[in-house]
Length: 333
Ligand code: ADP
Ligand code: MG
Image (cartoon, rainbow, N blue to C red; front, side):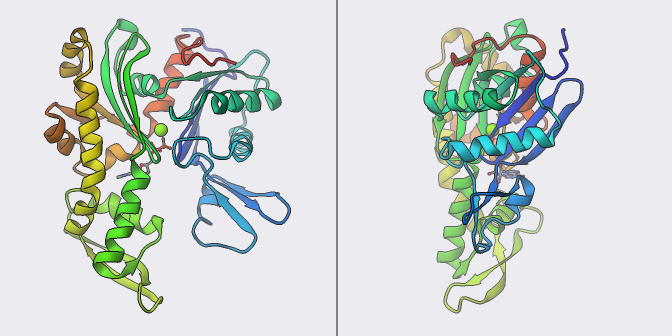
């Protein structure tokens, strides 16, 4: 294993960005958020500091999630955010150091190319873009270097990437635009129609995390929102089954897509998939009850990978260290 100082692995996710630096490990883990002063275009904050302003609507401040739906909706904001993160990570790029970047697979070739170009214009990295499911698989413990194949379900914010992988490549993959954000929206809608309570996405996300599909410990959780009729703040005990019912269509869509992709894998991969099980990665993998619901729908064993929020960046780091990236996504810059 050759370790070159200055090499970085970046998971540019729709909700979270993580940066790993050779010799230092994961040095940055922050929301993919940037706040911009709409009057003069200046950057007000990035990452957690920007996210804490989201949905609070301070005057003249635009809080942007530049990758929200799994596409790079705002390239300039994405580039500014990445530069800010790299500065914060203390990683200026050395001559000939490599940056391995995972972008959502919904991003177009032009968008991918632009991210790489933006990084190269202001940093000295050689940028390579890699397929997210392959990085997730490596980070989820599959021994891709030994020829092991497997099946990954990466439940992020904007998209769920469902893929069979082998030989450091994607075998079959579908990117579903239904993941954590869609779950949050489903909870917002259910609270509004079922309880007359208007929730922020942040409050809905908390309910999702706490109650999931299982109702959590208590079977209910408290949430603060606005009363839909009076528009004044209200505290409410939200029942677990309201949240579970709201989440079911999103989870069912994920489960059915897993089934579809499974039904299309080559026979030679079947044994690896059954033995290794479907590995759930991404933040959505932590949804209480998700693995067993997917087992039910797709009729195959499913397990949550260790530390699922970091699988992609960990896998990218492994690829970097084993020199397994060259031109993998066909867009090395
Ligand atoms: P991305 O790769 O798109 O940035 P992540 O893998 O970082 O996404 O996952 C973010 C998503 O995971 C968000 O929708 C977040 O609400 C969700 N999430 C994080 N923790 C949990 C949890 N404990 N239960 C359910 N969902 C979670
Ligand atoms: Mg991700």
